[in-house]
Length: 320
Image 1 (tube, rainbow, N blue to C red):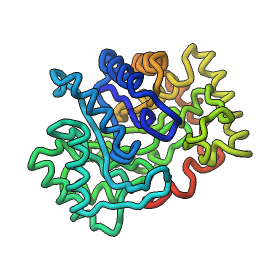
Image 2 (tube, helix red, strand yellow):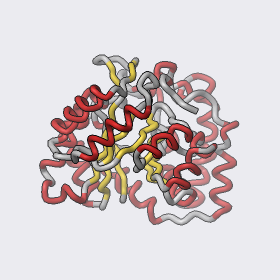
Image 3 (cartoon, rainbow, N blue to C red):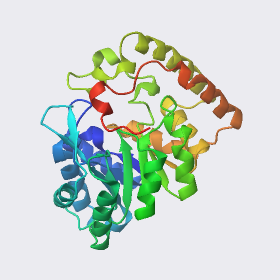
Image 4 (cartoon, rainbow, N blue to C red):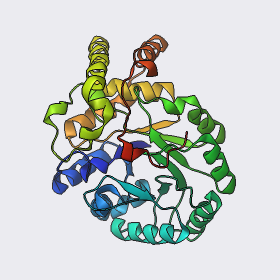
């Protein structure tokens, strides 16, 4: 299964064009990419509606297309601040709403986007299990997304109903899952979906932080501002030299590092450009030598990275 992500087609990274986005989704499917990741909060439903148009245009291929979406983050229009909701009534209603927007009879993978500890995990999992039994969803994932779930939470949930996948930010410069969660997933046979494997595009070496659009979420990311930005730019400069020496693009090397180091990890790299979509897909053909992986691990040692990866409002409900 090859993965793609559609969040940036609706929000967080400036304006987007629906017709261009749909053309890119078509191209992705033609390249063999069949896993598309969304959430009810991306564009306040717009992202799911966009995927619904894509699904409608490929009804004959629906069984080959894997649609993942999420619940649990509730925001007001044009605000990044949020509250969390994992209550049974909310899950049932938001699942119904997602199905309507997606225009499909079932969701292949339904994530808890962020854990709300006001709802016991038993209640949440039993509600999701009931949705699986009635056919609304085909699998349950815990999307760590903006908040990491701990290995303990994963084990608790998995004991109630098998978990299909865990999603978390994981890349060369965001390495927390290596502390325990990746090993727990491997032990339980749970897939690990790595979002933002290109570090919000910063690791590509092509991001000009001074030219970001007004509505771009990255304006508020601490590691992309001030002294932290200056520090991290030096690391990416060294990374770019390695990529050039090894004859890969930065993006390809980011993805190849993940795919070679952890075969059970599925990276979802978002883009709005066909050129980069094709480039990213070619990373699956790259084989890195152990000494190359070690060199990258050393360069991006967590001690070398400056700044947090989210602003304060993004840390609610985090488990470590």
